[in-house]
Length: 194
Image (spheres, rainbow, N blue to C red):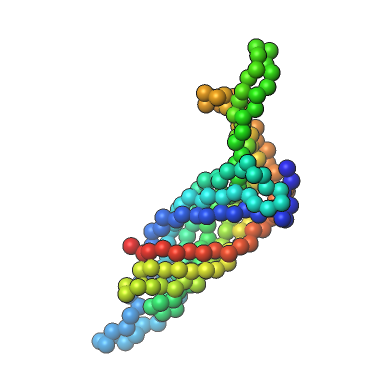
């Protein structure tokens, strides 16, 4: 199946992040003169699970959500106590998966197998998100921004299993030319800093 520009990938990512602040608190004190504000106030390393699926003109109603890995780094620039800007750079896998059973006539009689067909799209993505920090300790946050992804590789696979779960056959095809090279979208984040 050839996917055209009307077919989009929809994805939701759950992140687990570890942050490092390269400097002490940026609050000024009455004793020491204020130091210049550092451009990068925090660095985070993140990994998570991306849940994605195709939607649009060429998508199939039989497709199911396809969980995959994502990992990257985030850089933060603090504007003040309540606002910062986050730039994230990460690798993510998006795609879709379809599962169905087929019954066919074998020389020994009818045979039923389960097929799993999928598409794996690997992206290098950059996102910019202005964030608002809430609460008395600014631990709650919400941000909305934009992202752009560059397609690194794309593959299509078909795996055939017996009904008992044994793998019978696997077929892979590289099909990067069937997909748009760039992916643009809106990125929304919210959470709590522990």
